[in-house]
Image (tube, rainbow, N blue to C red; front, side, top):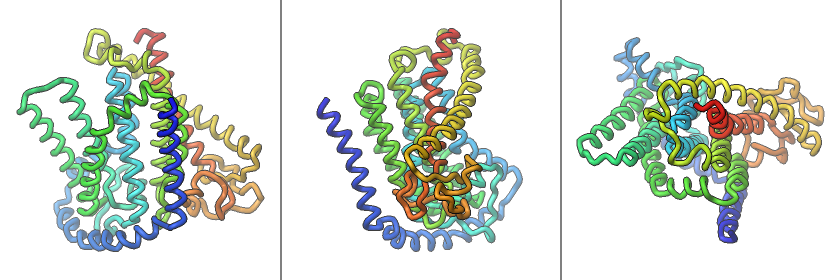
Length: 410
């Protein structure tokens, strides 16, 4: 027990120390001054290649690559992962969720540290078919998140399928590897065709993904064992989640990247908390799995009809509860607050000073993200609301909804 407390405390203290040191030494600015010019040069040098590829513009290609981008986007995974939990493949679902959160954190950190531009539009034609793509276009370019997520998640899925099925057939393994490579190739090429990324962004995303995937294969069993049978899991992960809100770099200009990180950080906390509490009830290896007599297709459809509306209601209630509680707690503790999105009434800081343009507050420095000890003098309560909203949603996926399934015999 003592050794467990030591490594958990050591991990958190190490991260807090890194935040303080990096902030004091201005590490982000120094790294950016070294890397950004080199990346920007390659982005500009890659523009003729993008224009050459876009000379083959066609409506079908626009639809194909836009569709593929949606299929491997964060909103898609947010919708897909709950269904994966409910199929009975709990280990795969929680590992892919945590891997997605890890990729999102590292990828967005690098984006905002480097702050390298996307291909200039014009002369490049940029296709943003959805609102999600419009938000993606507001982020920096290197590395390509779509490439990063596709390599990591499809690679881990292939690893799981081969391990779960204990497949020994060499040709079928090669087919699986070929399909993964084909998907990654289409996604990478599509991001260039759509004008969303330069070649250097795709290469950067691919290289980072291979490093992350190799690391995850080495540690995923230890992480899973800790979540399902460790001690102080909820306390440690909650503290880690808060620290990771601090341990995020300040971009050159505001982007939505920190918002994406906050949401998936909350998702990871909700999943870990729910699984740790209900593992022996709903998430052990002997639970019914889809395509078996214990979980038929009609039963799974019933789970979807019950589960999806439930998690949407929980998401709405979590957001409403956070919007009500956080301002009360902040006022009780004397913390001046503001809200750029969720609470229109908070258009002024607690001291009565009129806030600046909301875009100026979209993203702040490491210690300015969550609390009030900054030059701005106010706490952006939207960060806490977003974090709790997605934590509540994820908790419902693995705790509340499976409880409903149990009561309804689904």
